[in-house]
Image 1 (cartoon, helix red, strand yellow):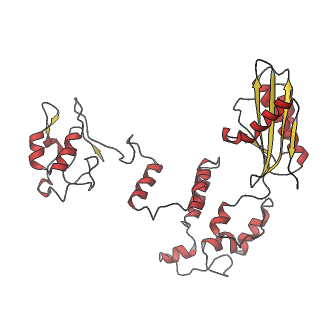
Image 2 (spheres, one colour):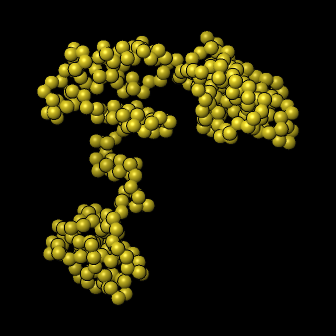
Length: 337
């Protein structure tokens, strides 16, 4: 949409320049003004709209919208702005909302994918991988079937196995070549690999993944702190949780370091691969005994990873803190198998 400056570059009938005008252009309503510019509607001496001319030229609803457009005191060049955002700055999110408003059914997200997309865009992986996964979810991949439907190829057969049409499902799950690739990824559970819907398969969790969250709470006045650890599987079931009381602690950082060390010790004791250890402290570790021990323990298990987690994941830990501080003793809860 055009933002009116001098108005010399904006056609009255052929350009989009009136905010909130449903039809966009005025072409169908003022066809005799095709060669006229918006500058002709502005009183150049006073930098105001020529109200009398506008009211006598346009229908009442259009005239009212034009007169609402503010004009700057000093004339400046006309400029193009994105109408999908109040800030006039383009964003992918606003373009999606615009498309959805034009045809809600065509761009409506399935409930299965709604949370999936939120997690996808927040995941710390290369952008090109995010876009590729997004293309898969919408079936925007250039497989043989899609290309055949667009008359770009003469065959729909899979070029790798030749045993079936190369649909999205065949490409990623049914083709023997793809199945062998998935088997190489030992941390994936391939049971029922081809027996679930593609959308369920795309969003299903990795069965073998274990996540350990740790956090700490520090009371500066009493120099007492509590650290908590929660262990979950890929389905968010709690496998183990613990809380410890520490006395004589002088900083909140030490509390976090103690919690991190405890989480690392639990990860080593579990002797599992692919464990993710998450904390929420963005403080860069300073040299010290506890921090150094945590680093050494982490290096002993190269297959485990560490990262930060959000405050919304603290609810279970807070319950342990309160119980542990109430009883003034460590608390460990372990899920019965």
